[in-house]
Image 1: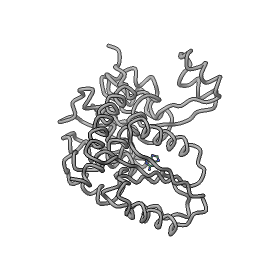
Image 2 (image 1 turned 180 degrees about the vertical axis):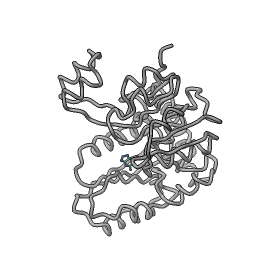
Image 3 (image 1 turned 60 degrees about the vertical axis):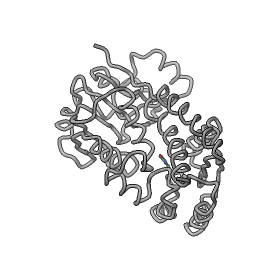
Image 4 (image 1 turned 90 degrees about the vertical axis):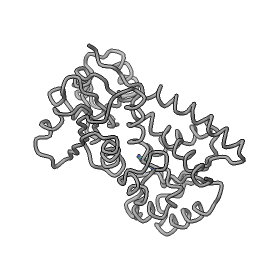
Length: 307
Ligand code: GUN
């Protein structure tokens, strides 16, 4: 049986449609959900992500504003900006695009965001609520893991009682997705760069979440046939040898690679997808959900502050 592709773009489209209705209902009640995005410096990838976030706000009728301090900005100046945004009633969500320059104290800044406006779910209060198993409707949870749970739910993939293995222990993806899977009654193992014999764990997984940032790290021999694979990796490859290693049989992809001189691959080798029962592709998988969930958190934060 061939593997089912879990179409993140289609699922994100469904979520955005539902949100447009909620935004319109909020406007009928007299308020417009609002998001402030802080983009420090000129990291090209961050600029692309932020542009996409602002554009999606526009599509859904969410108010947005962009703050772009230079890379020389100090932690104190950023703390002042966050303090002003915390006070403004029309701002429901504050997103500080990461990574920040090395001289900025990222933890201090993330902790300065009003937890009620923390649409990234990075504040320790929200991380703690998530760990405590608070109901989904009452928690601002990190967007990428929240998107993964939406994909599983909306695709009818069972989680309760399943063995889930998470590769990666970042605060943005690995740790929160482990918490969410535990809350959904999966049995969860978290592996990382220091884990010995990683394949012994991955081969046991009914649900395998790869979030380590290494192109094609998960190979077919590491996957149990019939598993569900969620690929969170976004790795750019530019070398022809690496392209051939992963995509030698893919003519359509070759044309794109030759035109752009690069392509994107996740943490999973396409040969591993082939033996799964279902998988999220890269691109077109969980990436599309991250922005939809940011919008969802903004609408949720606006409603919760007014409840
Ligand atoms: N950089 C990469 N992913 C994210 C994210 O989810 N939120 C923020 N704020 N920055 C990021």
